Image (cartoon, rainbow, N blue to C red; front, side, top):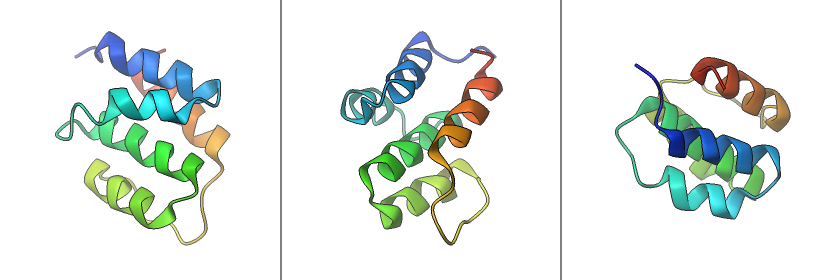
Length: 83
């Protein structure tokens, strides 16, 4: 199943550092693991690790202690959705 175009747009926004605009998109779908992963990345960028951990759990992503590298997370999500 291909991801929704809005998730692709959210990833582009994350790549450009616009986590606030990406947040508007990713909070629309709290059931999709990919959207939840993107939502977690938003909160990593915001600096809210507690909230990021919540969204990573919802996404089925491995737990983390220190924040993972944001650029690496964006690249991995982008690869996952085939963007």
